[in-house]
Amino acid sequence: MRPSIQLLATVSRGQPSKLRKPAVGLDHFIQRQRVLGLWREIVRALNKIPQSSTRDELHSYARDEFERHRNVTDLQHIRYLLSTGKAEFDTMRRYIDEQVLG
Image (tube, rainbow, N blue to C red; front, side):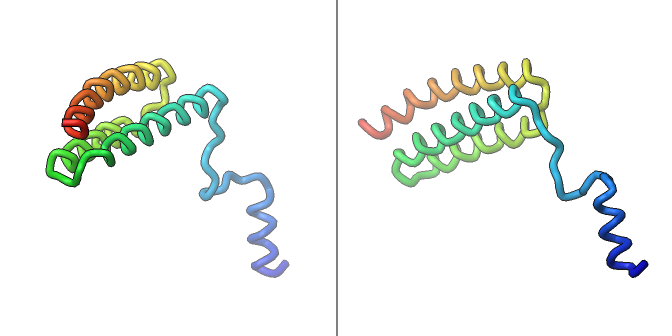
């Protein structure tokens, strides 16, 4: 058998591909969408602040928090992080509204 055909046969035998990510369940998918929604909401709110060091610091803080918890897979922990993240964002939003309106 030619080496290229042998390689193709080996890959198609059901060996796990290094390119494919493992499938996630519906609950994980839903929580991921909620996390992405919160991230987008934060970025949109921060973009309302005129360019300043404060805006950059807030964006950096938010990004660091999301990156720090990137590999969390426990659904209860994800839900907890989402609720505390939303609470922190509500506090941040009050500050943002003061900056934009004031």
